[in-house]
Length: 414
Image (cartoon, rainbow, N blue to C red; front, top):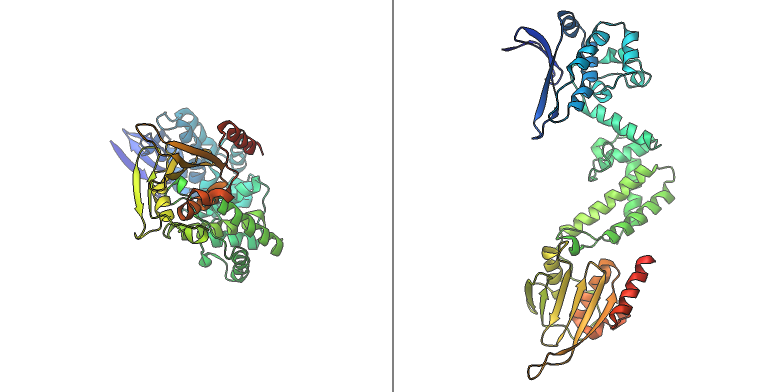
């Protein structure tokens, strides 16, 4: 039989219950193997109950000190009741200076106290009892998150000025640097917003005209990492030149914002048509696309999409860690290209002699190195427009496999 003896406004602050006639403190903390909240209890006395009912600060301090014991129990272990009981008298019944001394020796959850209004400067000085004079039953999780964000930066030696902090709030990355950035002007102090907007405008001007293309090798919505890195470097250089006072965190978050927005524009647009930028003489009329799993897709001129757009859509759908070789073949002309994404290379294949009388046809195979996704796009476009002959300027092309492998290894060490 379990009865609730005392509870506070916040459901997460530990309750006092009476179970089978015994007073216990009950709290939820951590999670089990199924990610369900765990509940822990340990015995207390009447004197402890009296302090818990009358003194919010002591109640919260006890909670803060018990939480590390709950964390130590893990997903299925038992709470160390002896250690929990040993905290009762020193926290609930001792003089403030003794409580402060205890908190210098035992682990405790600082964020929990900060969320409930504890004075941060006093906590930093080890004056936990004095810090709890401003404690409240209600919790402000954002206050604790901001404190932890500040501590993480301090550990890296980063100090933010008012404008730096305003920029991070504008992008939504003040609390968590891994958050996808967005524009949130309402989160910024109105007095600082014009300065923030000027910084962002500098970044926009620096990357005007730049784009982050798609990289179907990594999936349908993946974008080109080289394009991203190029845009990020351009923006960061411009910001450091025009706003030298900005902290690195502020510069990086604006760069992240510009790149994320450019990547989103690319992801939400149809697969790019590269053929208009290529130089060719005889546009292909029918092609066959295949992957390393034997899946084939046909393309014919006059359809709704260009050959390059259709091919890269095919790659985006089919590419995977075990499917990194794709082929484009023009059966009528007897030529094709094979793209090796795992090796940043390509092979162009032309038919030298057709097979006759049961004999196999003879092919000329030449290999070339490819410079990233941009290089692949140029080669595919050139082939679609002009066939293997149009690939000549993108060499050198090597027919000796051993020589090509040596070239590929040399590039890997450069």
